[in-house]
Length: 359
Image 1: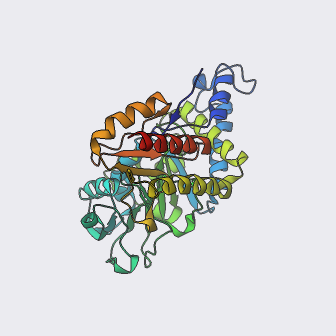
Image 2: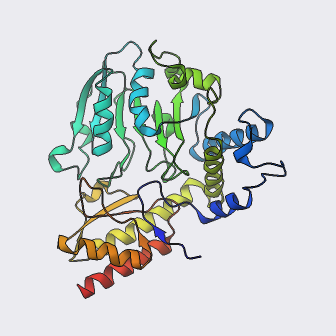
Image 3: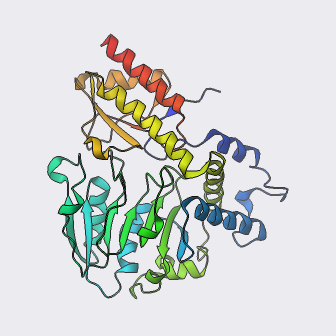
């Protein structure tokens, strides 16, 4: 068997030890006599998986005790609707920062539930930078301030948690959660799909401060109500049990790597290597301001776009796959999440240099 280097933006590369353990435990989990796929979500065996899942996530992120951790479905996209329905309370406005495609999607959906205040936008720079926080317009009467921590399409990442001037801070961390240190207590709510840094698609993590729970509007279905899900330990409906199990394996793998501090060093090294190769090239270009370049998703453009197809074909022939940029921006994109080994980044750099030399 020959495995490729998978640079997909998501679903994305998983740690090989996790895949091997899942293979070995497919027929039987921990002498239970059954596969995780067969377990009742309310049985004692799955209860262990669920308890370890939450405990490990709390430990890795340092989640304070006054935060609920929910494991839901629908992806971050569903949360674009559920967040305003759950935490607007008696407010009618919410602030949003627009830094790219995923911010725009969240903003569009929020318009269905409240008045949206665009506190800042980098649309005029084609989403290649993050507006200076000092320039943000914050409405003191808004229910919350929403930002997208990392934009997978445009390759823009907040280098630090922004100041919210007292507003409840809400963050979509789908593509950089667990990749770097994060002050959970600075946020009222963090949400993330798992299909980039945490496991396979199918699970959405919501970390929400307790005081924000229990005031959802009266039209929201119970399955989407944070209070109802918290009361039922995210088991109000039957969850995708095997996906929970796989996310749990990824968390244990992260712990074995040394936790968040170690994986952040790993990610800094990988991204620096690739950005350096791009910046020193005359064929490749990254348009994002150096102050907010993403460590996770690195877009780059070839000086001659007629070389795009030959580049992708040659890369795939060399085991470097899923490098095509998003259709809305074109070019290339290398997603180098936690599970991407440094060897994969070095292989890409070597290929890029050889392609440039021969073209």
